[in-house]
Length: 265
Image (cartoon, rainbow, N blue to C red; front, side, top):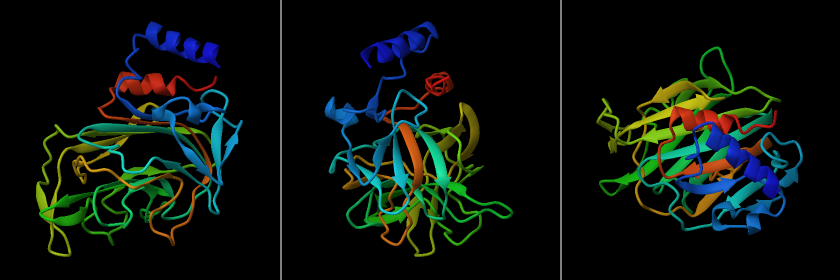
């Protein structure tokens, strides 16, 4: 195990991209015994099991789609300003409102949250990948999706997921980008402060971007889950995940390519 990780580190250094582990808030490669090693790798399995069907290293997590999920520690600040999220995903089955991740509050729709999900299908497609955020603004909890009933929806990342194959997903949130939308009033009459830009990368290449995004606040989240929604009726994730990472900064294109190159070949 140590030899394998040392080999990966040498590969990154020789590729000129030895910064890929800087700024990690979470790094879970789901290797046996990993969750006892260090705080950034601390996770708890709820039904989900370790699997040897992996894309990075020798282990991944399998979710049965019934009641499996992975939990991260409560009441920690995972998102504050710029951030990046990286994960390898292999979907066995896919349903609307499936979550890749949901880092949320005890009561949904009550404050800071970051959610990556399958949303309402775009016209002529299915399994539409969405990204959604919540913040507190002017004393109210507001969502990055203003017109929730639109199709394909304002949270759509321009990609429909494929089943039964490993794909590398990366979200990069850049708060410094000038957002042309500004403050928009939603259907409830509440102001939504759009700020920055979200960019989605698939297998090392830019796939889509959105200005329907909110700058996170330094507020902790209580329900920090992979594979499960904070909304009880929503279905659980069915498939595998590997090498899950959250960074407290923007990843560069070079670093995203370096993460993609960590895959088993």
